[in-house]
Length: 242
Image (cartoon, one colour):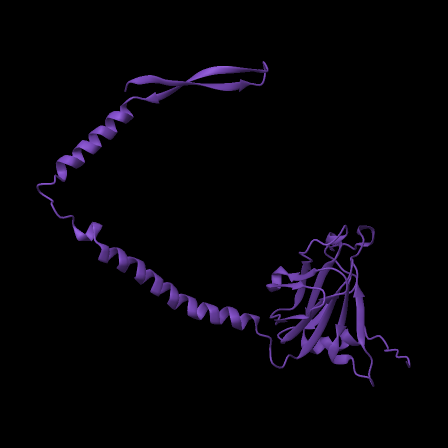
């Protein structure tokens, strides 16, 4: 195969701090291959033998059909997909438990709204990240909180999220949950934890210097143990007269 010098180009020599020239070598046979290919096409498809192009290749009808049919298929796929996406955002009509998560800089407050009756005690607690010096054996840094959100397993839950200052995000990837927390709005999501265990999450909205120190810890326990776990965290409700 013949090799020819096509053109010169400059490159930078960092060791000697100067530009150097070099030649680019391109195969000369590439031009010959293209000429041969073009000539063979003229010989195989002359105008005398093919005065009218084949419609299977150049027809307008086939172009329209192969554009419309995939569009129709996509429409049939989109209709159930939209219905599924809409149902995923739907909140359970009658959830067993409602929990309100309030975002702060840089901690969270959780309220179990089902226990906020005037004649009963209210369950409200703050959740802070555990400093590295106070971590116990087996706990993960920047993921462990001093107060976990205890929920019963295999139960429909409603989570209401709102902030008091700046935008936040309530995200637990292992539960498939991520909801933006916008000031002045109440957003809600529905979850149902199918297995007992501890699920970790973090705020995915950058909102300050201690953004990385606001973990989310959800602990799913059996329904029979849920009552005792929640009763240990009950805080007496104090009300004052206006």
